[in-house]
Amino acid sequence: MMKTNWTKALLGSAVAISLVAAPAMANFGEWDANGDAGIDNEEFAAGFDKDVGVFGDWDTDDDNMLSQAEFDAGYGTRDTAESPFDDDIGFDDWDANDDDMLSSTEFHDGVYAAYDDDGDNIIEEPEFGDLGDDIGDGGFWDV
Ligand SMILES: [Ca+2]
Ligand SMILES: [Ca+2]
Ligand SMILES: [Ca+2]
Ligand SMILES: [Ca+2]
Image (cartoon, rainbow, N blue to C red):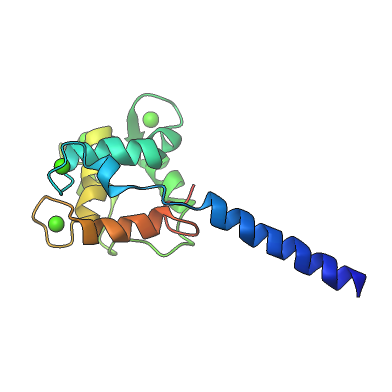
């Protein structure tokens, strides 16, 4: 009986803590640096780098490029979560200059395109909402 009560108490405090600690990590207004109600590629790269930062994490040899192996290793750690990407997402699709390496720009443009549902090269607030879900607890980018 005591044990059950303790478990409940612990669960209760864990929920309380997560409610306090959970406020949105990705804030549309913060990412939209020029305040035009849309997020362009550059704003996206800066915001994603700051709030998610996976490019640096995946770049294990710190050469500012992702090799296929680094990409696969980084992406592979996340394949248990629901992917925001269609099945056709891949290293080759994102490697715009075909040098078999992903630069930070190529990487962020690739991710960006996945969230720009209507393909108008602006991430509007509803599209940003999907990104926020993926960055949040248990989401694909939850780090
Ligand atoms: Ca903007
Ligand atoms: Ca690298
Ligand atoms: Ca490249
Ligand atoms: Ca859009």
